[in-house]
Image (cartoon, rainbow, N blue to C red; front, side, top):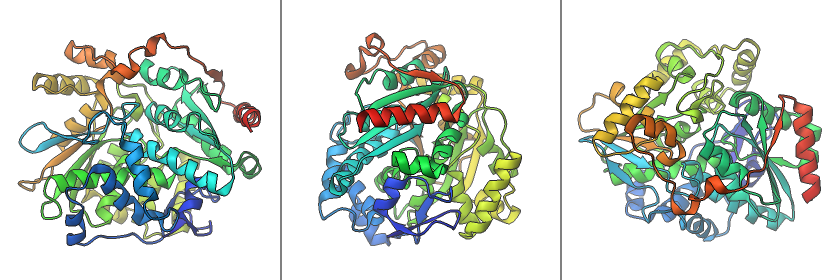
Amino acid sequence: MRYVSTRGEAAPRDFESVLLAGLAEDGGLFLPESWPTLAGEEWEALRGLPYSDLAAEIISRFTGDTFADGVLRDMCRDAYAGFATPAVAPLVQLDERRFALELFHGPTLAFKDFALQLLGRMFDHVLARRGERITIVGATSGDTGSAAIEACRDRANLDIVILHPEGRTSAVQRRQMTTVLSPNVRNIAIKGDFDTCQDMVKAMFNDAPFRAEMNLSAVNSINWARIAAQIPYYVYAALSLGAPEREVAFAVPTGNFGNVFAAWAARRMGLPVTALIIGANRNDILARWITANDMSARPVTPSLSPSMDIQVSSNFERLLFELLDRDGARTAATMRAFRETGTMPVPDDAWQGATSLFHGLAVSDEDTISEMRRLHAQGYLADPHTAAGTAASHACAPEKVGVPIVIAATAHPAKFPDAVEQATGTRPELPPHLADLYAREERFDVLPNDLAAVQSAVRSHARRNG
């Protein structure tokens, strides 16, 4: 299995190199040189497997010979053994055709645990074999940071620095990051929004001398391994509901496009996915693109669903590359225009081709509260991101009779207790392993939107531990 950059100028490489590199040297994102596909009987053979074994079977299609026989399976079993339910990713029926795919039973209560618990183990395995050390830098709108820190804390061969936008995460999200006092972990609050943090991470990767000096790697969804590790839960849900004989639709609350792209990838592998529904919030760039081919960035506005407070959706570049017939030069030119003008000129024919599969809805804070209240009245407690997904599923449901709609329930309600209490009158409690979260010591730095200052902080952290 070889990988190419969406911008066409980086040399193809294997999975191990992609895992450690994160972002391609030409600024692009890695994708498989050719997509693995499964026939009907191969999908059927996966049905009934425990989640960890199914995950290993799917992810192995992307890892090539990076891991010896049985190693990936053992890593998957270890990664998901600590989840709060044996099902790992349980389906809960909401009504006659809607199901919540609960992705929040991992250690940090969000879907990011599925990928990052595994990536931490992958990094350890590969780095130990190579005798190397890396510095991971990442940006978070709330959930990636805590999941990455939990997966990477105290690991011998890596340091991790996470940037988050000051004051723009929930208190639970912030504390899950800043109360981890392991010596290889550093948290930085940036004066700006998530897009500011994300731009800073990309700038560090595009600074070739700094990238080489720090041996940088990424855990954001710019790292292809993150996407590969999220594909299995869509497969698991679809097979549970009758695939490959039965089609399925997915509704995904998303801001950075990584989670819904994983669902797209499952479809590209041959899973019978008839619709992909995006739930956005007031930061509605993805919904605007789907409904009107308007991919224009606007200022980020804080909302009740902060993990989606994003206006530059990094993973959209992967879909763009596919829509442009894998033309790296056209993709690079389109992304350059977006960076220069704030508007992405997606050709109409490419956009129209995408709208046959993608549907989208921007859900206001008021409608989010209403949807949370409606779900609670029916016996289901949802966080605001999941509510955006269920609201979109009602507005954008495919017309095919009998097609079940799976909503990605991306976060535990206790991560957003204020919003949940406002909507339902119920304040969700943190699970026992996080019950003392508010009593734990916090440790983080506050820095301006200044690349040199952040690079200096990363350098001092890595050198201290190196």
